[in-house]
Amino acid sequence: MIDMQVFWLALIQGLTEFLPVSSSGHLILFSKYTSFADQGQVIDIALHIGSLIAVVLYFWKTIQQMLVDLFKEKFLPNFQVEGVRLAYYIICATIPAIVIGGAMKYIGMDWTRSTKLIGWLLIIYSIILWYADTKFSTSKTLKEMSLKDAMFIGFAQCLAFLPGTSRSGVTITVGRFLGYNRSEVAKFSMLLSVPAILAAGILAMYEIYQGGELSQLTMAYQAIGLSFIFSLSAIFLMMQWLRHATYLPFVIYRIILGICLLLDAYNVL
View 1 (tube, one colour):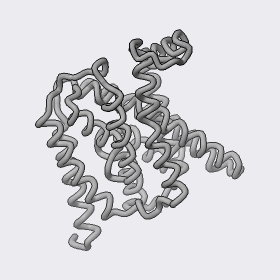
View 2 (cartoon, one colour; view 1 turned 135 degrees about the vertical axis):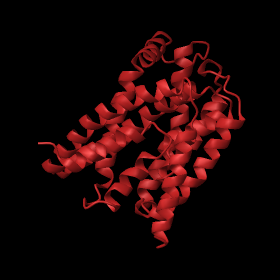
View 3 (cartoon, helix red, strand yellow; view 1 turned 90 degrees about the vertical axis):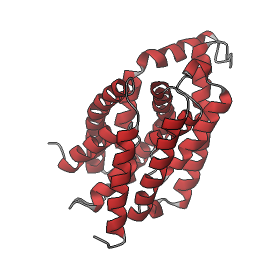
View 4 (cartoon, one colour; view 1 turned 30 degrees about the horizontal axis):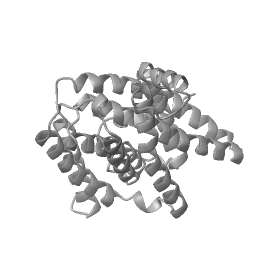
């Protein structure tokens, strides 16, 4: 039987992971404003693994080309080959997130699960996203990406450890500042999620296995499966949307949600 908490969490994760609205922030808010207990970071990561599988399936041709080119070039960094170049850009851009993520895990992240923090970050980064999306060119494609641009986006990804920021939001924002096409930078943002989520997911699943808690393991498997279904649908709709529209609806949504959270956090409501 499907756990209803996991079902709703997977729905939230699937609809928000690839939209610039902060999936981690929404997952935290779900437990704060419902009768369900906080699901914890293990289930959060399981939900992200489902999203990762969806990304791999949706962009399988691109990922397959990267793997084929890497094997052909014997994993040497020949940036003249498109698949090799993109693969190394993703690897290099992931390194900052792995380093910062490891440090955050050591320090502890409970302090980030604050309604006030989520509210302020939703508003602040929505304004930055709006500015980047409306004031900068949309002409560049991934074929024109440089290592420097990829690293800028990779360092921006580290900000997403703060719920309310949005991993896709900050990476897309920096990509738009750099002049990349909306759908192209969204694609890079989603591909960039693969190694980071995979590393965190393997670690989380190992910790569950070592703990021997079968009930938690069952919930994690359900979270992965349901999140995959909802995430794949969201990716398809997102990529269709970006072919003819801007990020303005997400900016408006973030601002409204952020204001509501702050009014509640400061006991105005």
